[in-house]
Length: 268
Image 1: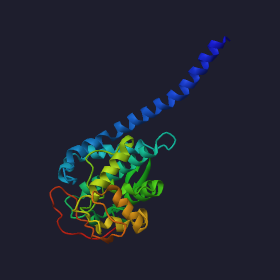
Image 2: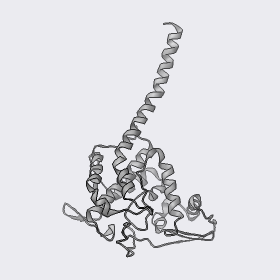
Image 3: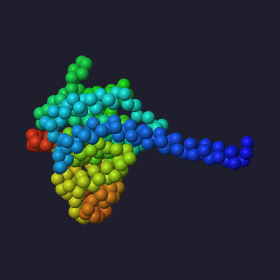
Image 4: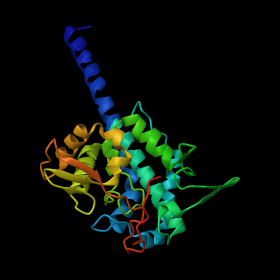
């Protein structure tokens, strides 16, 4: 075989070894974007400018929401071909859509904590009941939050991406999470939440933080580490010696209509 031919063959093999995985990844990204498009459209139509959900409007699109959730039965996240951010975005979208569908099914309701889901042998809380089928396996909201997100990724920012139906939770993002833009999306969510005086009161010497930070304190580290996290996103520079206090957390529904104005306080 002529040397030039061998050289060309070697070059072609190297090129294919590089190009084929890139093409496969691009195909996976396109497939994931198509999968999330119905949920993306629902969010664009039913999330208000202040980050609340229009559950009454979402009821009118309940079939579309159900169709999206049913499409997840055929999806099994693949750690071999999916990036960590693709997987994280997938589970964030799954959790949020499942929580929204659960609330829509019982709406009007003052708080998601008032919901009791009928299961074989009785009832379960909205957190423990199996609510969504992914790849042939049923998951509860707590399973997704703890096992598929928190325990797997150890990324405290997921708390700013989860939609649990509470008025004191971070604003709902008006688009689906996308693995290719996930870091920017979660950073923007954290920044929006921390700088919203409805949820957090920040001065250089004294911070009153959302009860979310208290509930998941171990994930934000020591008080010094927590203040470092706050300073990463806060517009007001907070001193390392700042006093830290926590605000009560309202489980009233994050509804566009303000149906649930009572302070349903507590943590699940």
